[in-house]
Length: 187
Image (tube, rainbow, N blue to C red; front, side):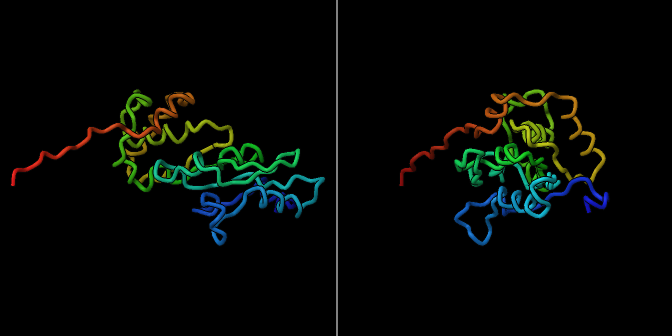
């Protein structure tokens, strides 16, 4: 299709195979193997045009930016375990985050106000956090919204600069909660 001029690039969208542990043999997929297969199909002297990967990325599915589940061999032949966003950067593959709001469930998960203090809408906070993952491979986030009010509120983030690496790391820290200690009852 690329040679026919019908498409410029292509990619893959997956729910789990790029986010699961390599030990899950029937589920795990190594991105570099897919990349090499695309190159093999067209030959070394041509561009393969395999330039996009889409996976769910949100606070409940953070594997793409926290778990080193992808093995990537560098030009010296050294294999390293990398997080998906780093593997995409190394392989020059654009990453698209899907489900950043977990089909609306993210609105029930508070995020640190300190890191994202200038975004007040909780959905927009989650979008701001995901769009600020410190990597050059993340190019977009796909967000489904049903109501025009949600679209307006969530577009708040385009007026804001991305979080710095430090602000991002602060934003993914668990919120400290007060410990609940039940008083002993005299029985």
